[in-house]
Every structure is written in structure tokens, then in C-alpha cells.
Image (cartoon, rainbow over all chains, first blue to last red; front, top):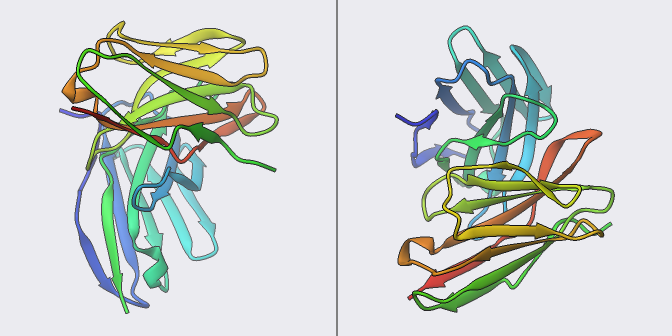
Length: 112
Length: 112
């Protein structure tokens, strides 16, 4: 079983809809949680970074962490065709020297 | 301010050959991590360099080795290439005072 599980999709939504993404994990030592966006044949781009449990909002993006359930989520409001990409969750047990453990990524398609 | 840069963009090798990939971190960053991303999967941690030393290593064989130079740039070397080494190789940089990792565009390696 992988440490971090993520539905590969694809997740297809109409423009303007809310995109809901999530990851589950098994390692209770993870404390730092990140979401990256990756366009085809490009490197991952950091979207959101949260520490421990709770919510964090940044523009159209909201990240939620529930450590008791080992479950994290990313919501994208008012989705645009330019949001079409693969979204990767990543986690780390420590801040310094932080090896990242990634999920497999969810491919998202936002249709005009 | 240039972000993380990697070279070459892509290359093709045959089984048994050796390859060297290069990475220049973002200005102000002193830590470089390398990841392997197979097609359709999330990145997997190979190793991390800080102060010219390998600080952490993932579950990769000794055929994978690296180096960090005094200017913080880094190289990834892979010996005795296998078909399964075909992947996108990502470099990420960070600093001890900043927790997040920033990724380069990657080097796409094809082994024939």
C-alpha cells in the first residue's frame, strides 16, 4: 500500500464549477501538507502549503487538513480552463530537510 | 530572479550507458533535492544535498549518485541505465530558512 493515495481521475468539470480534490495517507508522522499543480511536460508548481490540521484559503484555492482522519483536500472555486492540469498532493514529516512524499496525482479537465 | 533551472531538457540513452543531469537552484537556496517521476505517477524522492553532502536518500539503488558544488548547483548521475529509468527527473531547491521546495522544469530521460 502506498503511503499517500490519490484518485488518478480524470476529473472533468464545467467552467465555473468547484473542483474538489483529496488525498489520504497512512503515515501519522506527516505534519506538512502541500498541493502542487503540474501542467503537461512541466515541473510541479506549488499552490498551497499548510501545517498540521485546519483550513487555509488563498484566492480561489482552499486547502483543508484533517490529521485525525489522515485526509487532506483542495478546493478550487470558479474553475477556469487554465486550471486543467494534474494536481499532486505532497507531505513531509519535518520542515528542515523535508523529503516530500507525493500522491500519484489527479488529472483535472475544466471544460469551457 | 531565475527559478530552478535544469539541463538538458531531454536526452535519449541506451541501456547500460551512464547519464549526468544538472540543476541550478533558485537564488538564495542552499538545498537541492532530486525526484524521479515516471509517466502517470507522482514524483519519487531520490536524494537531497545540503552543504555538499547527501543528507537524505530515498529507496533508489547505488546506481543513482549525486554531487553538490560550492555554488549549490547539483548533478545527478545514473550508471548502467535500465529501461525502467526512463522518466522525468526533477530538481527542487529550498533553503534552511524557507520550508517549501520549488521545482525545475525537469529533464526527460528516455532509455532505449
